[in-house]
Length: 86
Image (cartoon, rainbow, N blue to C red; front, side, top):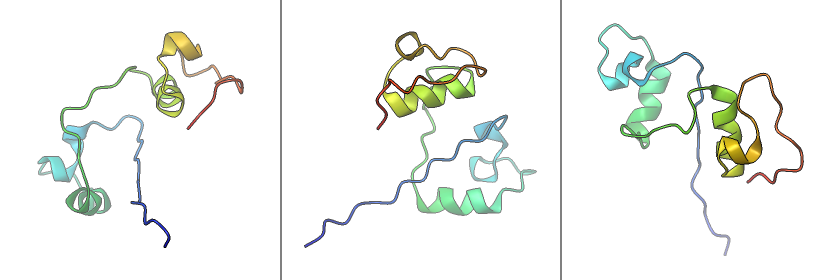
């Protein structure tokens, strides 16, 4: 029997705050697709980021390492192919 695995969808949007989405209560936000995904999935309302910059955060997510370990500290750098990713 094949083990059934859950589907995981990560949304990464630059320049988008959680409070600026309809599902978080903003009456002016028009985010119907994100609202539907949020109603059918899990939202992390108290999550934090290891980096305020997007590329280093994504590198940390892919490698499981802090920026000081993978070396990507600004958006203009590339992740070394020597780092193992999940």
